[in-house]
Image (cartoon, rainbow, N blue to C red; front, side, top):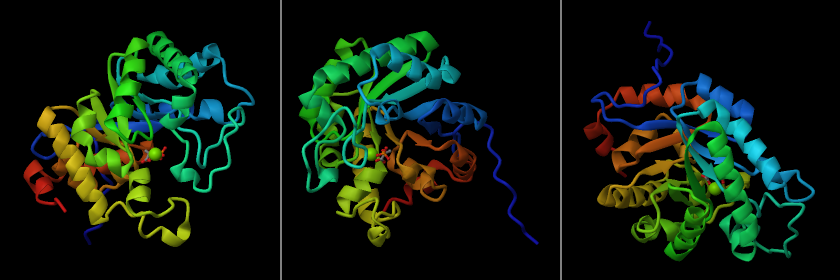
Length: 292
Ligand code: PEP
Ligand code: MG
């Protein structure tokens, strides 16, 4: 009988016709980073730095941050890494940053919005990230979470560049940002689609609420059309558009994303082999025909 064999993947992301797609890892700890290297990740597409802050009673010092980030980045010496600045607030409150009561925390002061009130918090993190990258020899990019407008992207890019960071991007996870991807791409070097939050905000369906989980399905046409708009904007200006939400880890969605023009997929280490193998079975033309 035709029992399907285990997916084979040689560690290089490409389609059957040779078209390259970078297959990257989502990490949040040194253990994640080591697992990602073992699984064949070409680099890090999303380093969630929250772990360094969430349990802290006071803001971690720059030196402590530098050490914590370096421990995660070290296995990726010589490779590309995307470090995301602090994505706290909403479901991830910080003990040392008490915030006012928010009736709708997912729509409140979270992600980059915290930095507008406290830019020095962001500056200290950017400085620690830059130092950790130099310590470990990684090829550094930095990106901000929860960006809504091109003006916010420009604000972040200016601060990151002032910190000496050469490659700056933002996440596209708010529908307004997806709709203005062209204007946002004019301010930064790349964008990365956070499909978990993008789905939550497109469908007005709390990502933590089981009762509306069927709306938070990345196969939904509305979400894929928005992804397609962002990817098309990237193709137009020749800047990379990645996906780092759960959609990237789904072997049945990966060809759809690549067909839309997405240039990299970032996922948990365990998903790399399956996605890598699925991409090997299709060419770019077949991927493009999957557009929703
Ligand atoms: C996302 O929103 O898709 C994402 C990658 O970020 P997080 O899951 O950390 O919010
Ligand atoms: Mg998110």
